[in-house]
Length: 216
Image (cartoon, rainbow, N blue to C red; front, top):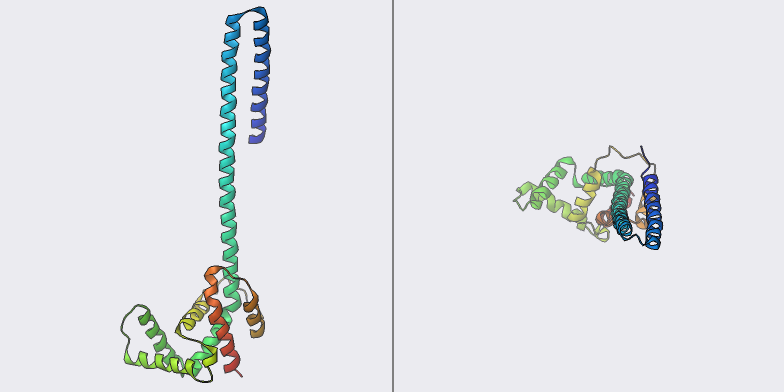
């Protein structure tokens, strides 16, 4: 395959040589008083200059295309960086969200109670009515979160939903890590997150606080 940059150099040199030769011819024709040949050479020179302008225009087009491709590449690199951050974030906190939910379900009285809570939350999200038992279990959860011993944690239904999203995110790509809850909590406090992940940070902080208290 021909090297485009080398081909461009060849074209530029050819135009340069052609222009130089034409200028020499024109000078000679002027000296000889050969008007016809002088005009003919001037016409050829004009055409050569036109080719030069076209070449310059094509260079600008190539530069624009190159800039566009570089911008696209930068966007793709940034997208991949964010994707890596997303994967790492959920890898770091998936298991702790799961641990929190296990403790919460235990405090609620078991999986049957939690299933009714989750069903109730889903229907509330869709602005649909819920059953009496679902409402009862939701109130039970609300009372649990608002108990004097838990008030300072500050958990609410919205926090629970975000923690569930962290827990339920696919674990296929996640590596198992051996970080302690304290290490994970400290990391959460200092790490910088993409904007779309920032909503998970406060609920997870509360979850760690609850885990530490409920397991003590």
